[in-house]
Image 1 (cartoon, helix red, strand yellow):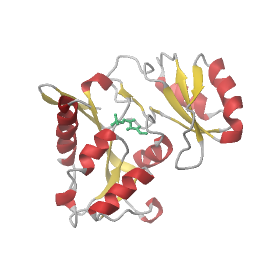
Image 2: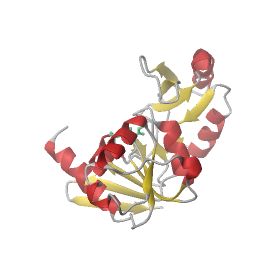
Image 3: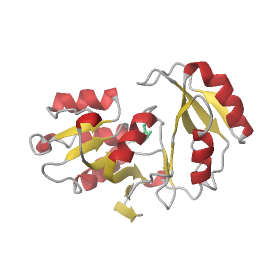
Length: 221
Ligand code: 5RP
């Protein structure tokens, strides 16, 4: 990663922290942009009540900072969720799951009052689908789901060697131009064996912070 990219990630992460308030429980996503956020969470130790994490990787980093990692089942309100994305459209509908954490990410997003997405400006697209759409599947259903995804017009590729935190496999679906994200999310959710599709259209982000060479650009739903 170039110094410029690293700087942009640090800047959007700092801008996202402006949404965090004392006493909140923070939802924490997964990925390199979120890692730039975790690098800046030190001053919040003791000020946030804890965090709900979307991956084992982020949980390890949170614990090493001294931030309690809470079970979502024990949390009555998740004030803020901060996470990256692989793509966003102008309506803040996202493709996520490049880091294979999509299932827990979708759960935490669903539980959060406010979802702030942090990314660099290259992730903003007119039509979702240039980034292959990740789909988490139950291992025994992988070939069955792949055939049905091909029937929807995509070209699913098994992400070899990857097992998710939930013990499942990932299919990355290439060649989709996602004109109607809500309908495609529903259609893929109907396929037996699908755990989660990495299309966040029913629950888009509320705020998108984009790192640019000139600073942070903010888009609100
Ligand atoms: C992980 C994700 C990440 O948010 C997404 O892949 C973006 O990662 P990065 O910040 O490294 O570009 O969805 O499952």
